[in-house]
Image 1 (cartoon, protein in one colour):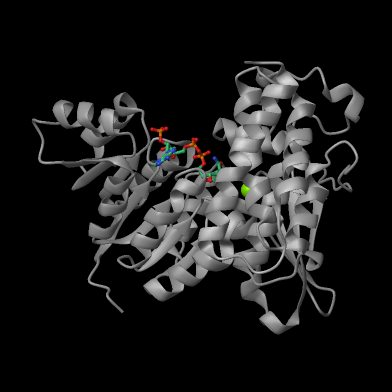
Image 2: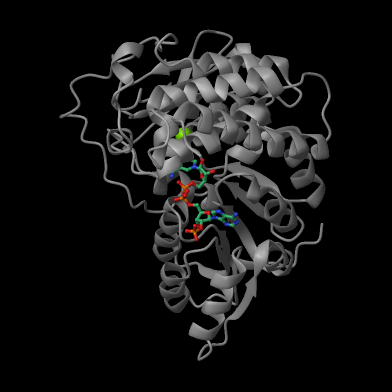
Length: 392
Ligand code: NDP
Ligand code: MG
């Protein structure tokens, strides 16, 4: 093991995002110091965070933004790196004990692998890279010598619940889904949904892309694949149940029929903090549940006709190869096009399903083949979105 890390020090990859900002709140709460901080392109937001947290290294994927940041932070000792290589270099230089991977999309994979060679623990929020190339990335993290702790709330709940029994005795994993803002609506009613409507999640406050994924249940599909990789379970042993209140964060059913769940108010800071402090627990930031006011917890079967991306994810998981990577890449593009108002809500599912069916490939796929498939899926999804939207 390479580990010469500083205790109670965190590196935050994707520090300006929803998870990144909440990680900084948690760092304040547990009195941790920030070693490396990275962002994509929003240098104004990032500068404020850099001034507050004074990291040793700040890196931005966007070179122009990094150049602006370097000028803005000239009066500080912060070393500023630019470009995707700069983000990876920052990960390779970190001395933090823990890394929180909160970069969205496939861009998280290279910094994640670099950080795994340096840090004691990888707290994994990113899901797209795990969905696309889970086997390869988890292997690389293990070879790097770091321990992986999930941050996604469902996977954190499963991770916590698994502690009550032996792995051999696990019968199935049960992922809960809020059902999103359009629960109960039929496919015909979904076509008029605008980005504003899709961005209004009933229980969780998240970044825009994942919020739209939740509204389509694509996010839950991703989480099935994420769970499959993180917990080495086949997709048919992972069940999804809609739970409107988002209080039961997920469950594990053991062989004897006992079901162990983790509950709490919907606040990602609990899962982030747990990943950082595991196996200890510290005073949390989330509002406590008041059991006297919770009169019911409801559970429903998911509506796979109105939300076809959930069954598509199961199918992609079963087929293996590049299917999940193609699905995830097509989704990233289609959601972006929807948020820009270029295609409709239901078109997203059509683009994702169309591209996945046509360009996914089963069988063994190398990491490079996955990256190529991801790239091609993006091009195809852009083309298909343009055809549907009638754009240039
Ligand atoms: P956001 O979009 O809010 O934040 C993404 C972060 O990644 C920002 O810091 C952004 O920088 C940075 N970034 C974007 N593109 C790049 C790039 N090419 N290279 C380097 N950095 C980049 O996302 P969320 O915080 O919502 O989600 C982060 C990850 O965690 C996702 O994978 C998501 O699926 C997962 N997740 C999120 C949850 C949530 O509650 N939000 C829950 C569970 C999982 P900039 O601001 O400069 O663009
Ligand atoms: Mg989740």
